[in-house]
Image 1 (tube, rainbow, N blue to C red):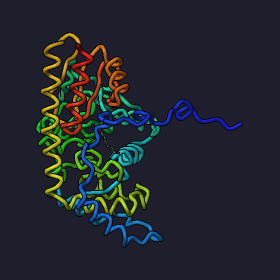
Image 2 (image 1 turned 90 degrees about the vertical axis):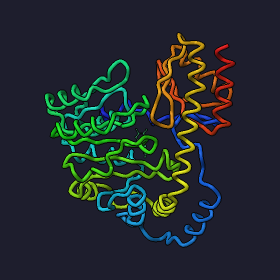
Image 3 (image 1 turned 60 degrees about the vertical axis):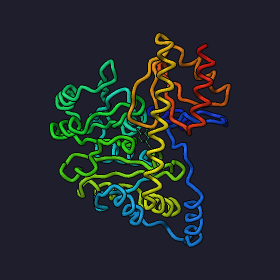
Length: 349
Ligand SMILES: *Cc1c(COP(=O)(O)O)cnc(C)c1O
């Protein structure tokens, strides 16, 4: 009888919050769908698709639009079917079976997941108790343990904290390991290394269209690195990894610079407002709720009532993310945030 091997036998399919809820604040998506002008532009462009033909394997138009938006060269860019695909491709191609990689925990759980599929040894470096990162300790561990690849999100999901770019540069220039810097939330903070990527032989930056850009449905991610690394990723990825429809819509959205800029600013201001409202609740109940000031589109909250709060909100059709001693709440629209706050006020009184 056929048996699943031990690396996959106990895996469970990824299970986001199930069911339909009026307000979704659980997955760090953008709270804004495309506006009607952009939807009309997309509708027109989709009419001209040759559905019988394979997509452009280099996603050239899309990579150019992305590169223009961030003022970098498209020769430093490769597109993926979400950055998740790129994380998986990078781990399986840039590491040999059994080699060591490192993560800085707590961090995005998919890193460890893909490392186990790639059959590499994943070392966890603990963050400080206040969730900041001791870069010197990270450098020391990477060099001592012969780590070949280190991956982390900056700003971090789930903590929402950022590491200043000077600190990241210190890490990149002090190790021989490949540094995979996941800037999924860097649109919300101004410490990107995108402009400097070609100065380093060992740096890959990941970006996604799933957060600030508001296009999670399309599955679009990007790796940015020097051309040697980019050509290697192009050679190992599956040839038609990004479908034609996503390429076309992605190109349109990255060309709408003003729209993206406005949406991003609105999200940041909603996040600040949400932080202030949550903070005033935590000032009233300091023993029950501790809020971390963040640099993303979500807020990470320590509370020993995580499960109770999560369930209470779900019963009222508001989905957030439950994470043990913490909850993570993505910012919604002003109206959604107001409803969340009024429910939380009811819960705490
Ligand atoms: C959401 C997220 C991503 C995005 O993944 P996609 O596959 O592009 O949707 C990547 N990294 C982190 C840390 C994230 O939170």
